[in-house]
Amino acid sequence: MAKGKVTFDIETCKGCELCIEACPQLSLALSSKINAQGYHYAVLIKDNCTGCVNCALVCPDAVITVYRQKKKSKTPVARITNVTQNITVTIDDERK
Amino acid sequence: MSPEITQDLTAEEQEQLECVYAKPETLTETRFHYCPGCGHSVVHRVLMEVVEELDIQDKTIGIAPVGCSVFAYHYMNIDMQGAAHGRASAVATAVKRLLPDRYVFAYQGDGDLAAIGTAETIHTCNRGENIMIVFINNAIYGMTGGQMAPTTLLGMKTSTSPTGRTVETAGFPIMITNMIAMLPGVAYVTRQSVETPNAVRQLKKAFTKGFQYQKEHKGTCFIEVVSNCPSGWKMTPLQANKWLVENMFPVYPPGDIKVPA
Image 1 (tube, chains in turn orange, purple):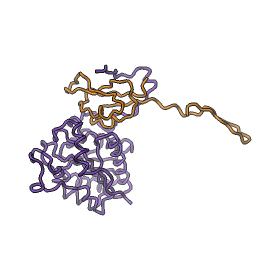
Image 2: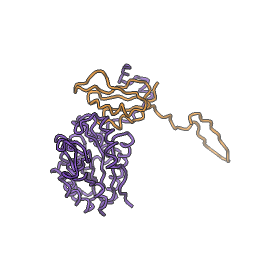
Image 3: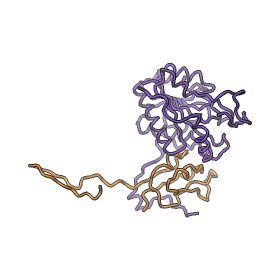
Image 4: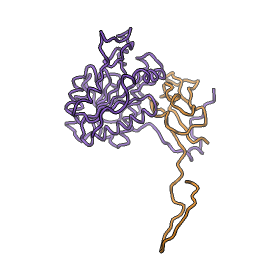
């Protein structure tokens, strides 16, 4: 599964192509269909989106919503309680 | 052409993905009336993102200008006031003096700020009013049909300079931002742009600083945004942004011009 995904408010898109130019993954293109305003709207055509937000930053009409893979949780794998003397604990955390 | 990927998030995607960017709630549901690719709506959105992030939606008052962005109050979900052509900074002065605890900004274009409103702009900055002025410079009068503005580049063709602007008849492009930076009342002067994602990130930082300095009573903050006008320049949005980098930046280089000590 891709690391990210973008969705478009296709009825508000004006097809200016700025997001297509800004996408480093070349995952966007204009649809062959048109919306009610008469514009070819932007769509995601490849499954390689990383959720970098570049497209949404340059979008003049704020039509893009960006999703990205959730960061792994930062909850500790172990908790040490009742320490009565100096000890050394090594946690082999593969998530780092 | 590759097939389109469905818009809807699958159950698996809903589980694994989180929303990292969405339209700010400080923008209304109204669709922008701007032409495709216009820089105005990017600036509107970035400004409102900053208002949302600083959580000052109910404490911010914007002054809408005359020009393409005259309907700014339809899009920004904050208190706004319209102003006579060029007088946004004068109205902003009054609002800030009556309600000193609010964040006040004037949003103006080049025809509004650098032509008819030159006197108000310069004197507001000279008094060091504690407001933020957002100046959108696209070197043309977009709303009225692409006429020559004071900031129009030399040789640039517009509907009132069909053979290109010449020094003999129209003088040089006015460097109003550099002029304002010389005034002692002004705290922060910067020139930004909106043509790339990184430029938009820089602009967002500039707006955040502008509101921050206003909170600290540093003086006037003046933020110029070098923007495009695809319709007025008779180009596609992509061509316009390319033209902006090649022609506008040599005359209006982006970067901070004055920062508070």
